[in-house]
Length: 513
Ligand code: FAD
Ligand code: DLZ
Ligand code: SF4
Image (cartoon, rainbow, N blue to C red; front, side):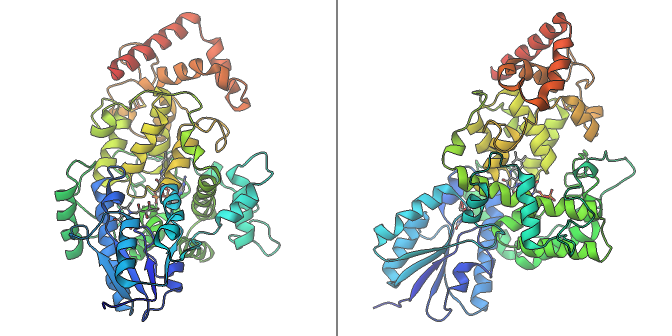
């Protein structure tokens, strides 16, 4: 008879936290902790090579830390002959081997795995205990209670409740520090040329990472993106250093320049930590506490601390709540009936539109683009062009190192594409080239002219923007937040309107062919 275990404790690749509920319920001497590198997970979309490298390397090093902390670990490597390639396959195989009384796991981040897991107990004939993931501030049940009976599910009200409940940036009388809940209006400054952001902290690949890089290049050659140079943190200790670097050198200016974009600075004053938070290397609660401390110590202004905390305590928690509240139908939304395939340049980055080339080019290199690039460049283009939401969602899910469906889908469907018809956003984030020009230095380096809407050199964002408004007038003109733009459109001379729509149609036809 081989060795047995009391329980099998499965840890998924985005749950690499020592404080995970699964581990809190594990007895190091009697249970076996399982981590598995899986074909099904690495290929359900063709993830960026850097994303797979990050996850496999972080999993291998997390397993080492668990062993050092006294846990019995069964680690399944990608190329082991017995590896069945899926979560259920590995749990079933290892349950047959260790004959546990029960399987313990923390709830997964994706609907796909959650529905699969519901059948495990029946198939395995032993209890499968799914623990709530308390790395989040707001549980799925709590969000559902918050949403219940509300006409509008806007993030702002949820965020205020989170601030009150978790006593974040709160005065003694429960009012927000600084007198306002939100300093968004102070988060939209243009970046003057003389303000030069300090480059983000990068890490040299360890021996473990080097081995994983070889594996990924060998096994996933046709996946999106560059594998080298690989500079992500892959352990909790390194991720803490990345957080320190952000708080020390970039947080103070995060608030002012949150919406800015610059050619030579892909990260600007952003944190560059979402991939670490999402896979468990950084704890969101610790991140918020550190930022609040920096504010109270007088190291960073309130608009920076509040603006940053809003992203994590507000947006991150809110999109997760929306995902679990609305799945699986949320993924089917297509408010504008958009059907076009994604243009090829989303894969190659080869386009004369400088803004798109920059956002996609750095995505290929880094598996990262910051929020405004995702929303107002690649997302805005997909919206105006009429790209099929399913294709756009797949693209966002595979190109970014931080992409997991619970966070990717609401951001793409709801925020970038308005495919949910306005559940998440009060109006589409559609914008012409003027916005991109205001917030970046891209247009000066572009072959198109941002001030033109017609003619050979007209900026495609301009004619696509007006064409989008005209095409969806029936759906949008009653939205009070769109009224001003429809007034501008209606006052345009008819010949100009026709020229704009023809330019858009020609551009779309060219791309589609
Ligand atoms: P910062 O700008 O420094 O923000 C700090 C932190 O706040 C982030 O690390 C992240 O944890 C959180 N955060 C900020 N904005 C959001 C948001 N809108 N939703 C959830 N969390 C947020 N974020 C992901 O983590 N995974 C995704 O797959 C993802 N897909 C996106 C797709 C689209 C179309 C858009 C518009 C946004 C998407 N985002 C996604 C949100 C946001 O762009 C990233 O979280 C952010 O760019 C990560 O970079 P950072 O760590 O430098 O963030
Ligand atoms: C994203 C990912 C990848 C690429 N590979 C693995 C893996 O080999 N093993 C694993 O446990 N998890 C992986 N993940 C993360 C899972 O896809 C993620 O846990 C689920 O989608 C649930 O959020
Ligand atoms: Fe993008 Fe238009 Fe500016 Fe070129 S001119 S960078 S296409 S917004």
